[in-house]
Amino acid sequence: MDFQFDIILRYLPDLLQGVRMTLIAFFTALAIGLPIGMTLCVLRVGKSRGLGRAAAVYTTVFRTIPEVVLIFWMFYCLPPLVGGTVSGLWAGSLALGLISGAFLAEIFRGGVQSIPRGQWEAATALALPRVTIWRRIIVPQAARLAIPPFINHLTELMKGTTLLATIGVADLALKSYVLGAQTFRYFEFLTAIALLYFIIIFPVARFAEYVERRLAVATR
Amino acid sequence: MTAASATRTPAIRIEGMSKWYGAFQVLADIDLTVMPGDRLVVCGPSGSGKSTLIRCINRLEEHQEGTITVDGIRLDENTRNIDAVRKEVGMVFQQFNLFPHLTILENCTLAPRTVRRMSKSDAEARAMHYLHKVRIPEQAGKYPGQLSGGQQQRVAIARSLCMDPRIMLFDEPTSALDPEMIKEVLDTMTDLAQEGMTMVVVTHEMGFARRVADRVVFMDRGRIVEQKPPEDFFNAPEHPRTKLFLDQVLGH
Image 1: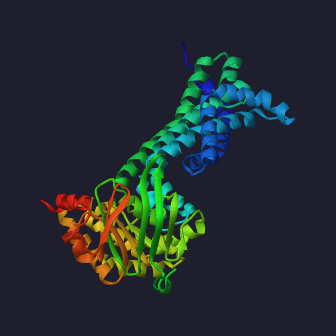
Image 2: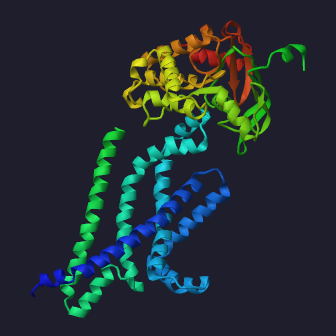
């Protein structure tokens, strides 16, 4: 078995196009998932029973649908419903974002609910407005606990973008299959994408470890 | 309304107040009047509802029946009223509940700056004034976790005072403290009482009750059983439940 390294280099611009698409899908999904996650978290912790239940239903539903199913649904079923066309990138990112929101809500809620009740009570007794309590008391403390699982989720989301290949989004994964098929050098290209994903995700994982250590020191 | 009660607004007036947790009644038919400058100690066996009672006064807990009026403001569903009451009522908790991620100074300035809209320098000057008063100005730059329990509780008192409350509620302020730190907190509270602060104190510290309170309220099973000046309360308790309680807390 000869590993032809030069073929990867020759097609590197193509592969980097794929990296770019992967990153676009990742950040789009995150931009959708983050606000959803925050909103759901606030609703679940908040006073209103009805809104809390609705948020819980959302979380359960979107945590149980497999990513691929929702990606297909968004790609094939959404366009006729809205009466237009939806690009694969958009459909896929939307699906991932909606699911990500459900997971993020649970991660944030875990952080918020580990804050002792006394913190809410002391802040409430001081007549602090609800927004200030969230912003100055709860979020800073909850973030310390939520950041490690949050960053862990980011790596999962990054890996999840490979599923967009199933609806023809020319991300890094699909680029590599295609290039492999065109050149019959699957071995080189599939190794190359594994490596490229590693190069993208490894710094994120390391950053998570670093933040975790920093927070452990700061919290004492 | 009688002529006497019309002349001065009570700091706290509770009438026919009851509260349930589900089917379980925690407070039954509470009547209590606290005049400005009163120093009230509330005691009773655990589970008697004394903490719940004072937590109703700033609506950390909701009551279901009767009325609570604080400084002339009726506590009901109206959030404006609730906010108005909380601005005037400070509270000190058993577990201190300082904000661990903020410095001592920031703990003291957060509420005055956001709620009272004070400038940073004014709020800090006021915070330092009260930190001097509770005798720990040198700790202003530290974080709560670096302080002893007694120091933390004194910071919690200063933090409340920074809002210039008219009434201070203390919910078992020394129960979580090591014995050698109880005195420093009680001394701070005694100073406060001598300056004329209206205080409602839930505590088992009977020495403090004897020295500082002008009235002791004894609660059992959600009811106020007896309320008297300390001398009468300790020397001539009427109710058998009060006698038993005093035997238990003073008998060792």
